[in-house]
Length: 479
Image (cartoon, rainbow, N blue to C red; front, side):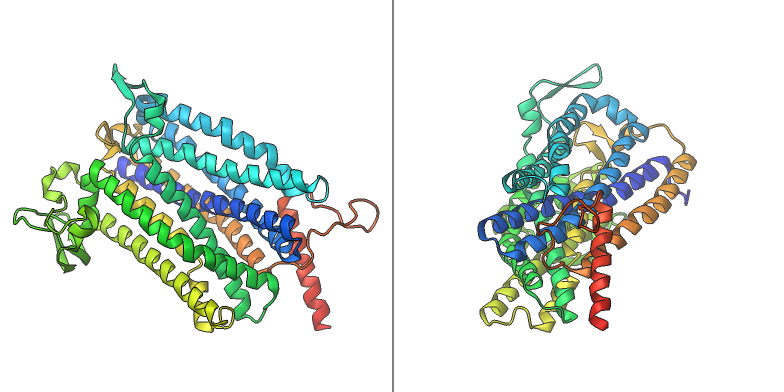
């Protein structure tokens, strides 16, 4: 298919499905914690704005959670269908780690998700808040196990290879492998930032349209506080993560920097822009700053950064891709920091909710967190190549023996089905966000009897009800 081999198509198929999937868990992680904060503030202050925001974002959380579960199941099956040799080689490590996720995170979420979604007027306030917190904790536990498995593939330890099969000998070392703490912190913070900018963009959208109420203002205010505080922390965590990668995966760092040769000695410049050419073994059209590469990565003005020519050609990641995905991630991170600082200046001047240039920036920054997550994910996964388990198993050794025609057909089907199913889901979520919070939603009402308000039976019906309610209000205002 298109001149691609089976290995390349298998990689593209997995990259496609995980790119769709990673969006939904990231938002689920951030929204679950945001909902816990909103409900806690509601219980503490009894301010209706927190209750209204809770119910507004709960519907979006429910739809997003469902899409995340469905897309995750498909991705998990690919380990057996497209990467059976990898599963046979390392399944004794990756299998139990994914099982631990099910036994802890999924069971916890399944036990309390129903109470969180449908129990507002049916259980006590304390129990409902406890359920929301448990769901939020469950999403973080899920992140813990997934990243433990992925990090072990980058920095494997705690195992032996017996008869060509990985055998775990130290589960503590496997789980808490050298890159795991940095990946866990980096991903969790990225999820919080992605959610914050989505919430901030939602508020900016309504403010730009003239819908200025306490719920909308509170959304923007909370989102910008998160950006101001957490975005710089993410930059610091990213620096630590980079130093860890330099120690354990130096070829990836060389590819990210587009740095080819240390034969001249001396410190390494930072290449801001350029085009790494894998065939010519050079970065063309480069714009660089002397010494800065060594300063950032080695914290020194004399130590060089590893170069791609230090590694055999067959062990080099694709610098052309990794170089640019890394810069997209960093550029968006800097924009997040700048947005948070600008929001603070406007807040101090009392113009946070009135500055249209800032509101337009907040609106356009809405998808920035998700784009940064995707760019970072591409950087770390493509930068690991040609290894599926770093230093132990090459990607070419882990693929199943399917033909290019079979993989091309299934890839085409995935593209069609994913864009149809998840495209509709994403449009639906955007439609919900465009409607905005409903005042006094969640206030105790009758739950039985003719003509009385009932709690919807499904998350989707809850969303439909909110839209219908808003449409009715709009018609009433016009009349």
